[in-house]
Image 1: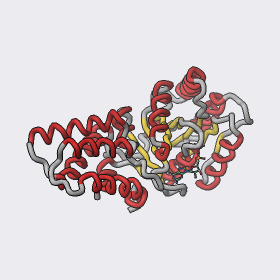
Image 2: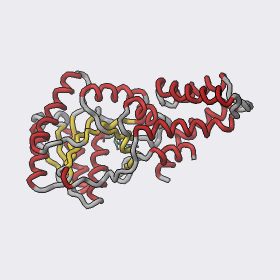
Image 3: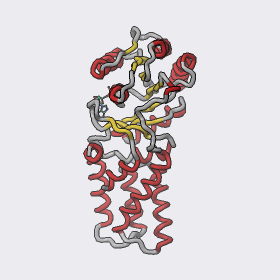
Image 4: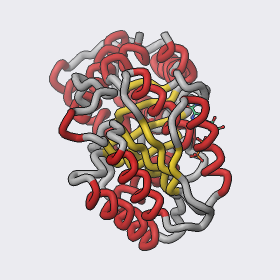
Length: 304
Ligand code: GDP
């Protein structure tokens, strides 16, 4: 029901538009499909994914000759569910860590303001709830506020934050955090990084350097590179995903601030476009407001 509440605005906006588009129409025709296309694009599903969905529905209409507008919601739901499950497996316990991958290292990337620190705090909370020990590494050494925020989350959740003075080398902070975690048999290390996008080569170099340093201490680290995107920014989130996936191997996505936005369609488009699993969604500012993304629950909630 947290998910239902979180997706409320997306749902309301989408279905009110859809209902208007099919009002007084009994048959799915070109007109209805044109409207649907517009609705999906304006719901931030993204143009490419929208066209893919429309194509599939068109095929179906061509095959079945007559499709009732009442069936449209159902068909749409199937198509969206299909797209989402292609890229998201749901049967892993996200807050457990294999014995042979400890410390399990998560490097968190994303631009400032998207909810990176909050997501790190929420993740730390969930791992801790699951009985695992956690260290946080403050490798965004460029903004005093970033370190301060991370320290506040560390205190809130009750996990240590490894930091150095402002302006120090991010890779050195990552080194400290991971080697200290290893020495103390800590289960999970979550590394915050600076999200400055103005220079792609810089970003790439910096992230690569941090990764390499960690991999030398713990082979296979980072085990996860989590890109945090702000769902409420719609197309900006697509753009950021493009830039970060070009700069480093992103292995998972967290999409935040889905509460209070009508742009929840980004989850569908981004998952489809980037073929990277959406692993977490943010549905509020509190520690508890992070959900492991489950495509079935998401679709159920959107169409339920
Ligand atoms: P960072 O600069 O990327 O580290 O962003 P922060 O973690 O500091 O978050 C920026 C703002 O977004 C803060 O006010 C957070 O409380 C808020 N925020 C983060 N995640 C969510 C979310 O899922 N929902 C809502 N409503 N707010 C969020």
